[in-house]
Length: 283
Image 1 (cartoon, rainbow, N blue to C red):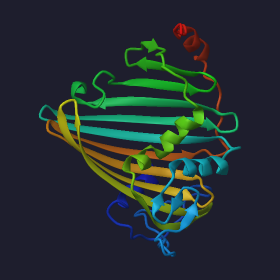
Image 2 (cartoon, helix red, strand yellow; image 1 turned 135 degrees about the vertical axis):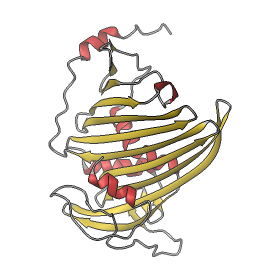
Image 3 (cartoon, one colour; image 1 turned 180 degrees about the vertical axis):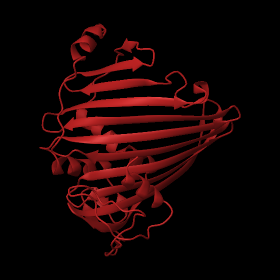
């Protein structure tokens, strides 16, 4: 996890902090992370528009927010770096699972290539992904949506994706997933950096639910950085799922990097994956 990701997790506890700047062209990098100035409502209804889909009350329209991100970076390829850590505790012990990945995005060409690596420590049968201990998954989003998996024993597969995903819709889900999960957010302040002014968005969700006959309580905390031209730079979240049979904590970091330096090419396994797809069913 990057220093900024760690710093934003610190923000879960305190918004106070000292000023600092990242390397040129990067997002604010401070530890502990803080804001230079608060963003306060200034009109009678208690909210003020900051960007399409974002007000002082937080994210009001995720689609509009992503459209602003897309417009801010529409002609420039970039990388989305992700890391998600699952820690599951049950009476049988603790399992730690990590998914690290990159999604290479070319907005102008409308294509994306995702590559994820998954690692498991502990008893895999008790983790979040019991049948997928250690493997690599790649997905290509273009005219066709294709995937390649490779397990720890070297076995390679090309699973059927079920339907085609629109590349930018997949990217939007990657960037906005945590913010959409909590529903209620607020813009707590702004911070200046080398490449512009950033709004700091936070949110929290808490709900009880039944799943496969098991009661569970899901708590989500999320923090995001959105540049004043609309670019969504980073989203960091922490989820805690309390169940009657155990507990899972999920820490996730999503960060935009490699702006203007990313190359997106159709993967070498494209033809093999295309050939492995089943024939279209008769309608």
